[in-house]
Length: 327
Image (cartoon, rainbow, N blue to C red; front, side, top):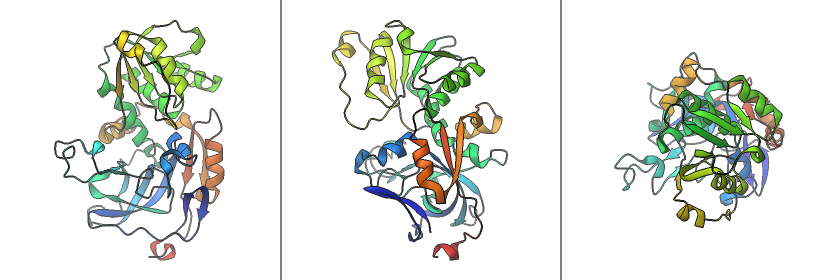
């Protein structure tokens, strides 16, 4: 099968062995995949990654239990052991032995086929397109913000970072009743926000300690520095960013000003799919380009361009079946 493979350099390989599902796994034919900032950081050296990236996807089960075969699915990215002291009380996303689809020790979705445990699967409703289904994972991550901090109706919340995830978080917070503002760098981002009645701000125009809640999703150390400056004393920073490197910030502020910092990672897929099915979150305007897998390197280059929103890899091509892929 074909796959984008990173081993010091990113390449399109044509002869990657077909995944072999374990007893509790299925084989999925990839239909669509999305490129996120984590994928871009991985091929820049984050985590010492080697392998097939990609964790936002929609596909069709082609091998596994009869009840799943033929179903259109997306899937949670944490592959947990199910038996450690975090899995047993129901926190598999923090499994002590977890592997992570396309990120850590588990081949990802930038390939014709992928494998995934049955317990990770979610059926995509018929009314949700392949394009929209790709957003399930980041939308679930956006929903997790509301688990990290209680949002009261009308409460001011600032989102630092108006990329793909930041724009989804802004919509989720708006649905939760918050008075949302988003720091933008590009006019395109401001236009998308203004269409939904969300304030777009330039960071230099915001007064210090202006917001009780700040969501930091810029992916840059400067974003965390800005969050510390803009959050009120005794306020909360919800940290969605992962950083390539170790940010240097003034942690004394956290203690002296009694700031709470809440890490926030993966979130619930079922509510995310429900929002997509009901059309309550707009993802179509976040799609900026679509490339076939044979142009995957070009797709990654486009996604890495500053200000680019979601780039999709489209696997809709003739003649790709299990036999042709090497089964």
